[in-house]
Amino acid sequence: MNRSSTMARVDLDGNPIKPITICMIGAGGFIGSHLCEKLMHETPHTVFALDVYNDKIKHLLEPDSLPWAGRITFHRLNIKHDSRLEGLIKMADLTINLAAICTPADYNTRPLDTIYSNFIDALPVVKYCSENNKRLIHFSTCEVYGKTIGAFLPKDSLLRKDPAYFVLKEDESPCIFGSIEKQRWSYACAKQLIERLIYAEGAENGLEFTIVRPFNWIGPRMDFIPGIDGPSEGVPRVLACFSNNLLRGEPLKLVDGGQSQRTFVYIKDAIEAVLLMIENPARANGHIFNVGNPNNEVTVRQLAEIMIQVYSKVSGEKTPETPTIDVSSKEFYGEGYDDSDKRIPDMTIINKQLGWNPKTSLFDLLESTLTYQHRTYAEAIKKVIAKPVAS
Ligand SMILES: NC(=O)c1ccc[n+]([C@@H]2O[C@H](COP(=O)([O-])OP(=O)(O)OC[C@H]3O[C@@H](n4cnc5c(N)ncnc54)[C@H](O)[C@@H]3O)[C@@H](O)[C@H]2O)c1
Ligand SMILES: O=c1ccn([C@@H]2O[C@H](COP(=O)(O)OP(=O)(O)O[C@H]3OC[C@](O)(CO)[C@H]3O)[C@@H](O)[C@H]2O)c(=O)[nH]1
Image (cartoon, rainbow, N blue to C red; front, side, top):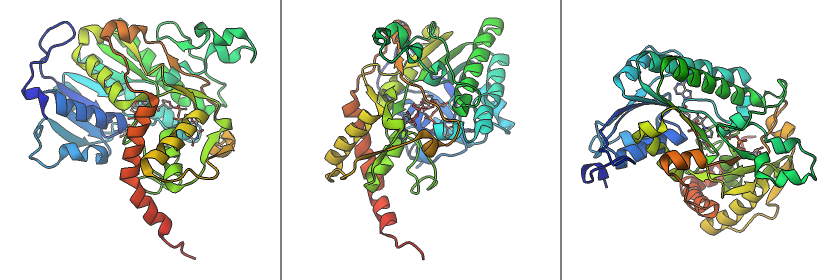
Protein backbone atom coordinates (compact mmCIF):
# COMPACT_ATOMS: atom_id res chain seq x y z
CA MET A 1 0.00 0.00 0.00
CA ASN A 2 1.18 3.51 -0.71
CA ARG A 3 0.46 5.04 2.69
CA SER A 4 1.76 8.47 1.68
CA SER A 5 -1.47 9.26 -0.13
CA THR A 6 -3.81 8.23 2.69
CA MET A 7 -2.21 9.36 5.95
CA ALA A 8 -1.32 12.85 7.22
CA ARG A 9 2.27 12.44 8.33
CA VAL A 10 3.71 14.39 11.27
CA ASP A 11 7.19 14.54 12.78
CA LEU A 12 8.10 13.72 16.41
CA ASP A 13 7.02 17.22 17.47
CA GLY A 14 3.64 16.98 15.77
CA ASN A 15 4.48 19.21 12.79
CA PRO A 16 3.32 18.13 9.32
CA ILE A 17 6.11 16.58 7.25
CA LYS A 18 6.65 18.36 3.93
CA PRO A 19 7.73 16.27 0.94
CA ILE A 20 11.44 16.75 0.21
CA THR A 21 13.91 15.72 -2.49
CA ILE A 22 16.77 13.47 -1.41
CA CYS A 23 20.02 12.94 -3.29
CA MET A 24 21.02 9.42 -2.18
CA ILE A 25 24.56 8.43 -3.12
CA GLY A 26 25.17 4.67 -2.99
CA ALA A 27 21.42 4.06 -3.32
CA GLY A 28 22.02 0.81 -5.21
CA GLY A 29 23.69 -0.94 -2.27
CA PHE A 30 22.34 -2.97 0.63
CA ILE A 31 21.28 -0.10 2.92
CA GLY A 32 20.37 2.19 0.00
CA SER A 33 17.99 -0.36 -1.50
CA HIS A 34 16.10 -0.75 1.79
CA LEU A 35 16.00 2.99 2.34
CA CYS A 36 14.67 3.63 -1.18
CA GLU A 37 12.03 0.95 -0.63
CA LYS A 38 10.92 2.54 2.66
CA LEU A 39 10.81 6.03 1.15
CA MET A 40 8.75 4.87 -1.83
CA HIS A 41 6.31 2.72 0.17
CA GLU A 42 5.72 4.99 3.15
CA THR A 43 6.58 8.60 2.36
CA PRO A 44 5.87 11.23 -0.29
CA HIS A 45 9.58 12.12 -0.72
CA THR A 46 11.42 12.17 -4.04
CA VAL A 47 14.75 10.34 -4.49
CA PHE A 48 17.60 10.88 -6.92
CA ALA A 49 19.24 7.46 -6.61
CA LEU A 50 22.95 7.68 -7.52
CA ASP A 51 25.14 4.60 -7.92
CA VAL A 52 27.29 2.66 -10.31
CA TYR A 53 24.85 -0.29 -10.06
CA ASN A 54 21.07 -0.56 -9.78
CA ASP A 55 20.37 -4.31 -9.59
CA LYS A 56 19.14 -4.10 -5.98
CA ILE A 57 16.66 -1.29 -6.74
CA LYS A 58 15.46 -2.45 -10.17
CA HIS A 59 12.13 -3.52 -8.63
CA LEU A 60 11.54 0.11 -7.59
CA LEU A 61 12.45 1.59 -10.98
CA GLU A 62 10.40 -0.62 -13.30
CA PRO A 63 7.72 -0.80 -14.63
CA ASP A 64 6.56 2.79 -15.15
CA SER A 65 3.16 1.90 -13.71
CA LEU A 66 4.51 1.62 -10.12
CA PRO A 67 2.57 3.88 -7.71
CA TRP A 68 5.73 5.91 -6.97
CA ALA A 69 6.81 6.30 -10.63
CA GLY A 70 8.37 9.72 -11.07
CA ARG A 71 9.40 9.96 -7.40
CA ILE A 72 12.56 7.89 -7.89
CA THR A 73 15.07 8.36 -10.69
CA PHE A 74 18.28 6.42 -11.12
CA HIS A 75 21.49 8.26 -12.09
CA ARG A 76 24.25 5.86 -13.04
CA LEU A 77 27.40 7.68 -11.98
CA ASN A 78 30.69 7.24 -10.20
CA ILE A 79 31.18 10.09 -7.73
CA LYS A 80 34.95 9.91 -8.28
CA HIS A 81 34.59 11.66 -11.61
CA ASP A 82 31.19 12.94 -12.61
CA SER A 83 30.34 16.59 -13.03
CA ARG A 84 26.62 15.88 -12.49
CA LEU A 85 27.17 15.37 -8.75
CA GLU A 86 27.11 19.02 -7.69
CA GLY A 87 23.99 19.77 -9.76
CA LEU A 88 22.10 16.86 -8.21
CA ILE A 89 23.10 17.92 -4.68
CA LYS A 90 21.99 21.49 -5.47
CA MET A 91 18.59 20.30 -6.74
CA ALA A 92 17.96 18.25 -3.57
CA ASP A 93 17.03 19.38 -0.05
CA LEU A 94 19.05 16.62 1.63
CA THR A 95 22.01 14.48 0.60
CA ILE A 96 22.55 11.01 2.07
CA ASN A 97 25.99 9.57 1.39
CA LEU A 98 26.22 5.77 1.59
CA ALA A 99 28.88 5.24 -1.09
CA ALA A 100 31.92 3.38 0.17
CA ILE A 101 34.12 0.34 -0.04
CA CYS A 102 32.96 -1.34 3.17
CA THR A 103 33.87 -5.04 3.11
CA PRO A 104 36.70 -5.96 5.52
CA ALA A 105 38.37 -8.25 2.94
CA ASP A 106 39.25 -5.07 1.00
CA TYR A 107 40.68 -3.00 3.86
CA ASN A 108 44.06 -4.75 4.12
CA THR A 109 44.28 -5.95 0.49
CA ARG A 110 43.16 -2.70 -1.25
CA PRO A 111 44.02 -0.06 1.37
CA LEU A 112 44.48 2.74 -1.16
CA ASP A 113 41.10 2.15 -2.81
CA THR A 114 39.59 1.90 0.68
CA ILE A 115 41.05 5.21 1.86
CA TYR A 116 40.17 7.00 -1.39
CA SER A 117 36.63 5.67 -1.34
CA ASN A 118 35.93 6.49 2.30
CA PHE A 119 37.74 9.82 2.55
CA ILE A 120 38.84 11.43 -0.73
CA ASP A 121 35.68 10.57 -2.69
CA ALA A 122 33.46 11.80 0.14
CA LEU A 123 35.19 15.21 0.28
CA PRO A 124 33.38 16.84 -2.69
CA VAL A 125 30.05 15.67 -1.28
CA VAL A 126 30.74 17.45 2.01
CA LYS A 127 32.05 20.52 0.19
CA TYR A 128 29.03 20.81 -2.15
CA CYS A 129 26.63 20.42 0.78
CA SER A 130 28.47 23.03 2.83
CA GLU A 131 28.82 25.56 -0.01
CA ASN A 132 25.19 25.20 -1.08
CA ASN A 133 23.71 25.12 2.46
CA LYS A 134 22.33 21.62 1.98
CA ARG A 135 21.74 19.17 4.77
CA LEU A 136 23.94 16.04 4.83
CA ILE A 137 23.38 12.63 6.41
CA HIS A 138 26.70 10.81 6.19
CA PHE A 139 27.17 7.08 6.77
CA SER A 140 30.19 6.35 8.92
CA THR A 141 30.67 3.11 10.87
CA CYS A 142 30.87 1.55 14.33
CA GLU A 143 34.42 0.62 13.29
CA VAL A 144 35.55 4.15 14.17
CA TYR A 145 35.60 2.92 17.78
CA GLY A 146 38.12 0.23 16.78
CA LYS A 147 38.92 -1.92 19.81
CA THR A 148 37.43 -1.57 23.29
CA ILE A 149 39.43 -0.26 26.24
CA GLY A 150 38.64 -3.60 27.92
CA ALA A 151 40.57 -5.46 25.20
CA PHE A 152 43.79 -4.13 26.73
CA LEU A 153 43.03 -5.35 30.26
CA PRO A 154 44.44 -8.67 31.52
CA LYS A 155 42.22 -11.58 30.39
CA ASP A 156 41.17 -12.36 33.98
CA SER A 157 40.51 -8.73 35.00
CA LEU A 158 37.07 -8.23 36.55
CA LEU A 159 36.98 -4.77 34.94
CA ARG A 160 36.33 -6.54 31.62
CA LYS A 161 32.78 -7.09 32.88
CA ASP A 162 32.28 -3.38 33.62
CA PRO A 163 30.31 -1.68 30.78
CA ALA A 164 32.51 1.41 31.24
CA TYR A 165 35.26 -0.64 29.55
CA PHE A 166 33.33 -1.82 26.51
CA VAL A 167 30.04 0.03 25.81
CA LEU A 168 30.66 2.43 22.91
CA LYS A 169 29.43 6.01 23.41
CA GLU A 170 29.37 8.56 20.60
CA ASP A 171 30.55 11.50 22.72
CA GLU A 172 32.96 9.72 25.10
CA SER A 173 34.57 6.58 23.74
CA PRO A 174 38.03 6.88 22.18
CA CYS A 175 38.91 5.53 18.72
CA ILE A 176 41.46 2.73 19.25
CA PHE A 177 43.09 1.34 16.12
CA GLY A 178 46.03 -1.02 15.57
CA SER A 179 49.44 -0.08 14.16
CA ILE A 180 49.84 1.22 10.58
CA GLU A 181 51.03 -2.22 9.36
CA LYS A 182 47.61 -3.51 10.41
CA GLN A 183 46.01 -2.12 7.28
CA ARG A 184 42.61 -3.37 8.43
CA TRP A 185 42.26 0.02 10.06
CA SER A 186 42.61 1.97 6.76
CA TYR A 187 38.79 2.01 6.50
CA ALA A 188 38.10 3.04 10.11
CA CYS A 189 40.75 5.73 9.95
CA ALA A 190 39.37 7.19 6.69
CA LYS A 191 35.85 7.14 8.14
CA GLN A 192 37.09 8.83 11.30
CA LEU A 193 38.78 11.62 9.35
CA ILE A 194 35.70 12.30 7.20
CA GLU A 195 33.62 12.41 10.41
CA ARG A 196 36.05 14.98 11.84
CA LEU A 197 35.89 17.02 8.63
CA ILE A 198 32.08 17.02 8.62
CA TYR A 199 32.01 17.95 12.30
CA ALA A 200 34.44 20.81 11.64
CA GLU A 201 32.32 22.02 8.66
CA GLY A 202 29.39 22.11 11.06
CA ALA A 203 31.33 24.02 13.71
CA GLU A 204 33.10 26.51 11.42
CA ASN A 205 30.77 26.89 8.43
CA GLY A 206 27.37 25.91 9.81
CA LEU A 207 26.93 22.69 7.77
CA GLU A 208 23.74 20.91 8.88
CA PHE A 209 24.84 17.32 9.30
CA THR A 210 23.99 13.99 10.88
CA ILE A 211 26.54 11.18 11.14
CA VAL A 212 25.29 7.57 11.32
CA ARG A 213 27.41 4.82 12.85
CA PRO A 214 25.80 1.51 11.83
CA PHE A 215 26.54 -1.49 14.05
CA ASN A 216 26.38 -4.56 11.77
CA TRP A 217 23.04 -4.07 10.00
CA ILE A 218 22.04 -7.32 8.32
CA GLY A 219 19.21 -8.64 6.20
CA PRO A 220 18.16 -9.56 2.65
CA ARG A 221 20.22 -8.18 -0.27
CA MET A 222 23.39 -7.81 1.83
CA ASP A 223 26.47 -8.12 -0.37
CA PHE A 224 26.56 -11.09 -2.76
CA ILE A 225 26.88 -14.84 -2.98
CA PRO A 226 30.28 -15.63 -4.54
CA GLY A 227 29.97 -17.23 -7.97
CA ILE A 228 26.25 -16.41 -8.22
CA ASP A 229 25.80 -12.65 -8.15
CA GLY A 230 29.38 -11.68 -7.32
CA PRO A 231 32.92 -12.82 -8.07
CA SER A 232 33.74 -16.47 -7.23
CA GLU A 233 36.83 -15.44 -5.28
CA GLY A 234 35.11 -12.45 -3.57
CA VAL A 235 34.82 -12.34 0.23
CA PRO A 236 31.65 -10.54 1.37
CA ARG A 237 30.71 -9.69 4.98
CA VAL A 238 30.01 -12.45 7.47
CA LEU A 239 26.26 -12.85 6.81
CA ALA A 240 26.87 -13.54 3.12
CA CYS A 241 29.97 -15.69 3.80
CA PHE A 242 28.02 -17.94 6.16
CA SER A 243 24.95 -17.95 3.86
CA ASN A 244 27.17 -19.06 0.99
CA ASN A 245 28.64 -21.89 3.10
CA LEU A 246 25.15 -23.02 4.17
CA LEU A 247 23.74 -22.91 0.63
CA ARG A 248 26.65 -25.03 -0.61
CA GLY A 249 26.56 -27.44 2.34
CA GLU A 250 30.11 -26.45 3.34
CA PRO A 251 31.47 -25.87 6.85
CA LEU A 252 31.27 -22.26 8.04
CA LYS A 253 34.75 -20.74 8.44
CA LEU A 254 35.47 -19.25 11.85
CA VAL A 255 38.23 -16.67 11.62
CA ASP A 256 40.67 -17.02 14.54
CA GLY A 257 38.19 -19.28 16.29
CA GLY A 258 35.17 -16.94 15.93
CA GLN A 259 35.84 -15.33 19.30
CA SER A 260 35.11 -11.71 18.24
CA GLN A 261 31.78 -10.37 19.37
CA ARG A 262 29.24 -8.37 17.38
CA THR A 263 25.75 -7.00 17.90
CA PHE A 264 23.52 -7.46 14.84
CA VAL A 265 20.51 -5.32 14.03
CA TYR A 266 17.80 -6.09 11.46
CA ILE A 267 18.02 -3.80 8.46
CA LYS A 268 14.30 -2.99 8.66
CA ASP A 269 14.64 -1.77 12.28
CA ALA A 270 17.69 0.32 11.38
CA ILE A 271 15.94 1.92 8.39
CA GLU A 272 13.23 3.17 10.79
CA ALA A 273 15.98 5.09 12.60
CA VAL A 274 17.24 6.64 9.36
CA LEU A 275 13.71 7.72 8.43
CA LEU A 276 13.39 9.44 11.81
CA MET A 277 16.63 11.31 11.11
CA ILE A 278 15.42 12.34 7.64
CA GLU A 279 12.08 13.64 8.91
CA ASN A 280 13.25 15.24 12.18
CA PRO A 281 16.12 17.52 11.15
CA ALA A 282 15.84 19.71 14.24
CA ARG A 283 16.43 16.65 16.44
CA ALA A 284 19.03 14.99 14.22
CA ASN A 285 21.23 17.86 13.03
CA GLY A 286 24.64 18.15 14.69
CA HIS A 287 24.42 14.63 16.11
CA ILE A 288 26.37 11.42 15.69
CA PHE A 289 24.13 8.38 16.18
CA ASN A 290 25.00 4.79 17.03
CA VAL A 291 22.42 2.61 15.30
CA GLY A 292 22.52 -0.98 16.52
CA ASN A 293 20.87 -3.56 18.74
CA PRO A 294 22.72 -4.01 22.07
CA ASN A 295 20.46 -6.98 22.92
CA ASN A 296 21.62 -9.05 19.94
CA GLU A 297 25.22 -9.70 21.01
CA VAL A 298 26.91 -12.98 20.04
CA THR A 299 30.38 -14.26 19.31
CA VAL A 300 30.93 -15.06 15.65
CA ARG A 301 31.00 -18.75 16.65
CA GLN A 302 27.54 -18.38 18.23
CA LEU A 303 26.30 -16.57 15.12
CA ALA A 304 27.47 -19.53 13.02
CA GLU A 305 25.72 -22.00 15.33
CA ILE A 306 22.42 -20.08 15.22
CA MET A 307 22.61 -19.68 11.43
CA ILE A 308 23.20 -23.43 11.00
CA GLN A 309 20.15 -24.19 13.16
CA VAL A 310 17.92 -21.60 11.45
CA TYR A 311 19.01 -22.57 7.93
CA SER A 312 18.18 -26.19 8.60
CA LYS A 313 14.71 -25.10 9.76
CA VAL A 314 13.94 -22.88 6.74
CA SER A 315 15.50 -25.14 4.07
CA GLY A 316 14.46 -28.52 5.48
CA GLU A 317 18.06 -29.72 4.95
CA LYS A 318 20.09 -31.66 7.49
CA THR A 319 22.94 -29.84 9.24
CA PRO A 320 26.35 -30.71 7.73
CA GLU A 321 28.50 -33.33 9.49
CA THR A 322 31.28 -30.79 9.97
CA PRO A 323 29.32 -27.59 10.61
CA THR A 324 32.29 -25.25 11.25
CA ILE A 325 36.05 -25.13 10.76
CA ASP A 326 38.62 -22.75 12.24
CA VAL A 327 40.81 -20.70 9.89
CA SER A 328 43.50 -18.17 10.72
CA SER A 329 42.84 -14.56 9.81
CA LYS A 330 46.06 -14.55 7.76
CA GLU A 331 44.77 -17.46 5.68
CA PHE A 332 41.28 -15.95 5.31
CA TYR A 333 41.97 -12.22 4.88
CA GLY A 334 45.76 -12.07 4.31
CA GLU A 335 48.51 -9.99 5.91
CA GLY A 336 47.50 -6.87 7.83
CA TYR A 337 44.11 -8.07 9.11
CA ASP A 338 43.11 -7.18 12.66
CA ASP A 339 39.72 -7.14 14.37
CA SER A 340 37.36 -5.27 16.68
CA ASP A 341 36.92 -7.42 19.79
CA LYS A 342 33.44 -6.33 20.85
CA ARG A 343 30.83 -3.80 19.69
CA ILE A 344 27.99 -2.81 21.99
CA PRO A 345 26.33 0.50 21.07
CA ASP A 346 25.25 2.91 23.76
CA MET A 347 21.71 3.96 22.84
CA THR A 348 21.31 7.04 25.05
CA ILE A 349 21.63 9.69 22.33
CA ILE A 350 19.40 8.08 19.70
CA ASN A 351 16.83 7.30 22.38
CA LYS A 352 16.79 10.85 23.69
CA GLN A 353 16.76 12.59 20.30
CA LEU A 354 14.60 10.24 18.22
CA GLY A 355 12.99 7.80 20.68
CA TRP A 356 14.22 4.92 18.50
CA ASN A 357 14.68 1.35 19.73
CA PRO A 358 15.42 -1.81 17.75
CA LYS A 359 12.73 -4.50 17.92
CA THR A 360 13.81 -7.69 16.17
CA SER A 361 15.63 -10.53 17.95
CA LEU A 362 18.64 -12.17 16.34
CA PHE A 363 16.74 -15.42 15.85
CA ASP A 364 13.80 -13.70 14.12
CA LEU A 365 15.99 -11.57 11.86
CA LEU A 366 18.03 -14.60 10.84
CA GLU A 367 14.88 -16.58 10.14
CA SER A 368 13.52 -13.99 7.72
CA THR A 369 16.94 -13.33 6.17
CA LEU A 370 17.84 -16.99 5.65
CA THR A 371 14.37 -17.68 4.24
CA TYR A 372 15.17 -14.96 1.67
CA GLN A 373 18.66 -16.36 0.99
CA HIS A 374 17.28 -19.88 0.47
CA ARG A 375 14.45 -18.66 -1.79
CA THR A 376 16.76 -16.43 -3.83
CA TYR A 377 19.86 -18.60 -4.24
CA ALA A 378 19.26 -22.32 -3.53
CA GLU A 379 18.29 -23.25 -7.10
CA ALA A 380 21.13 -21.26 -8.68
CA ILE A 381 23.66 -22.88 -6.33
CA LYS A 382 22.32 -26.37 -7.14
CA LYS A 383 22.82 -25.68 -10.87
CA VAL A 384 26.39 -24.44 -10.34
CA ILE A 385 27.25 -27.46 -8.17
CA ALA A 386 25.71 -29.88 -10.71
CA LYS A 387 27.76 -28.45 -13.63
CA PRO A 388 30.62 -30.82 -14.55
CA VAL A 389 34.04 -29.20 -14.04
CA ALA A 390 35.89 -28.77 -17.39
CA SER A 391 38.96 -31.05 -17.52
N1 LIG B 1 25.81 -2.56 6.42
C1 LIG B 1 26.37 -2.25 7.58
O1 LIG B 1 26.17 -2.92 8.57
C2 LIG B 1 27.28 -1.07 7.70
C3 LIG B 1 28.03 -0.97 8.89
C4 LIG B 1 28.87 0.12 9.05
C5 LIG B 1 28.91 1.11 8.10
N2 LIG B 1 28.17 1.01 6.98
C6 LIG B 1 28.28 2.10 6.00
O2 LIG B 1 27.03 2.30 5.36
C7 LIG B 1 27.23 2.63 3.97
C8 LIG B 1 26.43 1.69 3.09
O3 LIG B 1 26.78 0.36 3.38
P1 LIG B 1 26.13 -0.90 2.65
O4 LIG B 1 26.18 -2.00 3.62
O5 LIG B 1 24.85 -0.53 2.02
O6 LIG B 1 27.24 -1.17 1.52
P2 LIG B 1 27.07 -1.51 -0.03
O7 LIG B 1 28.42 -1.86 -0.54
O8 LIG B 1 25.98 -2.49 -0.22
O9 LIG B 1 26.60 -0.12 -0.65
C9 LIG B 1 27.47 0.90 -1.04
C10 LIG B 1 27.03 1.38 -2.42
O10 LIG B 1 27.85 2.49 -2.78
C11 LIG B 1 28.13 2.39 -4.16
N3 LIG B 1 29.35 3.14 -4.46
C12 LIG B 1 30.59 2.91 -3.95
N4 LIG B 1 31.46 3.76 -4.47
C13 LIG B 1 30.78 4.55 -5.34
C14 LIG B 1 31.15 5.60 -6.19
N5 LIG B 1 32.42 6.01 -6.29
N6 LIG B 1 30.20 6.21 -6.94
C15 LIG B 1 28.90 5.77 -6.87
N7 LIG B 1 28.50 4.76 -6.08
C16 LIG B 1 29.43 4.15 -5.33
C17 LIG B 1 28.29 0.90 -4.41
O11 LIG B 1 28.13 0.57 -5.78
C18 LIG B 1 27.22 0.32 -3.51
O12 LIG B 1 26.02 0.11 -4.21
C19 LIG B 1 28.74 2.59 3.76
O13 LIG B 1 29.24 3.90 3.86
C20 LIG B 1 29.27 1.75 4.90
O14 LIG B 1 30.59 2.11 5.25
C21 LIG B 1 27.37 -0.07 6.75
O1 LIG C 1 33.45 -16.27 6.85
C1 LIG C 1 33.68 -15.46 7.78
C2 LIG C 1 33.55 -14.06 7.66
C3 LIG C 1 33.80 -13.23 8.74
N1 LIG C 1 34.16 -13.75 9.93
C4 LIG C 1 34.37 -12.88 11.12
O2 LIG C 1 33.12 -12.30 11.44
C5 LIG C 1 33.27 -11.02 12.03
C6 LIG C 1 32.38 -10.02 11.32
O3 LIG C 1 32.79 -9.88 10.00
P1 LIG C 1 32.10 -8.89 8.94
O4 LIG C 1 30.65 -8.81 9.11
O5 LIG C 1 32.55 -9.33 7.61
O6 LIG C 1 32.74 -7.48 9.24
P2 LIG C 1 33.07 -6.61 10.54
O7 LIG C 1 31.97 -6.68 11.51
O8 LIG C 1 34.39 -7.01 11.06
O9 LIG C 1 33.21 -5.17 9.88
C7 LIG C 1 32.08 -4.50 9.34
O10 LIG C 1 31.45 -3.81 10.42
C8 LIG C 1 30.77 -2.73 9.92
C9 LIG C 1 31.40 -2.36 8.59
O11 LIG C 1 31.88 -1.04 8.73
C10 LIG C 1 30.50 -2.32 7.40
O12 LIG C 1 29.69 -3.44 7.34
C11 LIG C 1 32.42 -3.46 8.34
O13 LIG C 1 33.69 -2.93 8.44
C12 LIG C 1 34.76 -10.72 11.99
O14 LIG C 1 35.31 -11.05 13.24
C13 LIG C 1 35.29 -11.68 10.92
O15 LIG C 1 36.64 -12.04 11.18
C14 LIG C 1 34.27 -15.15 10.07
O16 LIG C 1 34.60 -15.66 11.16
N2 LIG C 1 34.02 -15.94 8.99
